[in-house]
Structures are given as C-alpha cells and as structure tokens.
Length: 388
Image (spheres, rainbow, N blue to C red):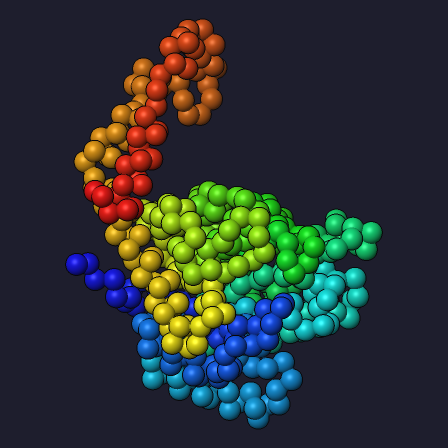
C-alpha cells in the first residue's frame, strides 16, 4: 500500500485561522474552545504539517499591549523551534474590525485608508520577523453593497496607490518578500473589487513593481462563482504569477464554505493536483479550509490529516494517469499534430498568411470526426475510482 504520510518536501501548510477556527457561524456561537497560536503550532506538528501561516491578529490580538505581544511571540517562536514548522506566508486582517466596514485601501474615509497602511506595514514587519517570504493581500471588505456609494474607478486607483506604497516599503526595508493578491467575487461584501484571478492579473500589470506581485488563487473563491479553478491557476502559472495557492473545496453558487480539500469535487481536485505536479510548482500547498462545526479538536486533526492525505492520493493518481498505457495512447491520438500544417503556425509572416488563405479544408470531414473525449473521461473516472 502506498505511503500517504506528509513530509516536509510536500510543503503542506495551514493558517492559524484554519485549525484555530472555533466553529462560529452566522447562526451559532463557538463549539470549540480557542487555542493559543503556540498550541495550534503543536497541533500542526502532531499531524505532520510543514508550515503555519497567519494574519497579524491571528498571532497578536489587535488590542494587545507590547508586553502581551512579546509573550505571545516568545511562545510562538518556541513552538516553531520545538516542531520544526516554518512560516512561509503572512497576511493582514483588513476585514474583521468594524473600522474596515467600508473597506481598507478603498474606503471612502481617508483615515481608514491611512490606518490600513499603518496596520499592513506593522503586519509585514511581523511576518518578516518570523521568516515569511510571501505576503498575501485579500481584500475581503474592498467592495460595496451599493455602487451609489463610491466610484469603482477611484477604488481601483486607491488600491493601486496602496500596493505601490507597500511595495516601496518592502523594498526600502530590504525585505526579501513577494506580494500575492487573492481574489473573491463576493462575501463579506455584496461585490468585491477584482473578483477573479484574471482581474488580479490585469491589475498587477498596472503597478509600479509588477515583478514582485503575483496571485494567491483559492479554490472556493473561483468555484463559488461557478468558474473552473484549474484554468485560473494555469493562467497564473503561464504568466509567471502563481506565488501561492489556497486549497479547499466548495459547492458552486453557495457562500464561501472552505470545505476539506477534495471533499466535494474530487475530479476538479484531481485536475488541479495533476496540474501543479506536472508543471513542477514549488510553492506551499496551503489549506485554507475549516473542520466541520460538528468536530472537537480531535476532529480538527482528522480534518487536517484528511486535506494532506487527499492531496497525496491524488498526486499518486496523477502519476498513474501519466503512465497509463491506454490513456496515453488515446491522448497521443487525440493531440496528434499535422506535420503539413506545422510550418504555418507561430509568428506571422506574409508567406504563412498567403498559404493559409489558399489552403482548402474539408469542414464536413473535420466536423464529423469523433474525438473520443467520452472514452478518455471515463478512463479518468475509472482511474480515480480505483478500477485501473
């Protein structure tokens, strides 16, 4: 039987907010007692994770005194040393406090925008202190319920100004840091600006330092809008902008569920894992998900182990797909090139244009040919269900 034990080279990470979720939802209070950041690090060490990520206030409460902050950091650092866990990524909570009810970088109130910059600079310092190399920006409140309230164009400008400012801050301080922008279409705001990974990629191209800014796509954030997540990841990868990734699962058309990775759409999860492994993605596999509200902390451990185990099982299935003789023979047939057409593709030349315009194509014959995708898809299902 294959070994699906997580190892450091798999780079499986969890946020303090994921395993630290106390099960509160809009209709009910907590079902688990809160654990300290240090306790959560020990929990992640027990299940075999590689690293732990945090928002600033996951680690240090927003109203903590300097003495309280020092004590928390001391305990957290000791837990990291004891377990061997690392901190690959950090981020800022710009959505939880009431001050951000109308956004942070895009808020109408300039005092809010200034405070958001202050809070983020301090949070960047905190992340770098613990070794983070990736800094994520999720604009959970950067949106609106009514477009009467603010200009969408002005919001774009404000967001750009903030990112440019913070890039310069990181450069000025000599931080070895890259920024990753995380898209989401809605919730908690009615509509959130830059709602998809494609929007974020377009926005990054307008920044002063696009080379240090990429994306952090999340499964649920694309799937809740009915989009194909793997396609968004592929677009980010092809652009050289896949700096980080959030793994979970989601039913389309519902609120952000943050389900255990692979627990809802196993086929989509397979294609995602196969893509990441095939292209050689070297970043963290970060699980931004939560255990069911039904669970105690033993159940939280089951949840965390399940995320990692499913990824490793799908990784094995991807390797099997790539070596399955029948599947590969079918793919070779389906994806076969026509040597006579090869010289006509690529960079434009007048000669290629002339040859293409004069070349006859038998549309009826081409259109009537079966492509055998049904057979290929069923072979994929057979493989996933252990029948190959």
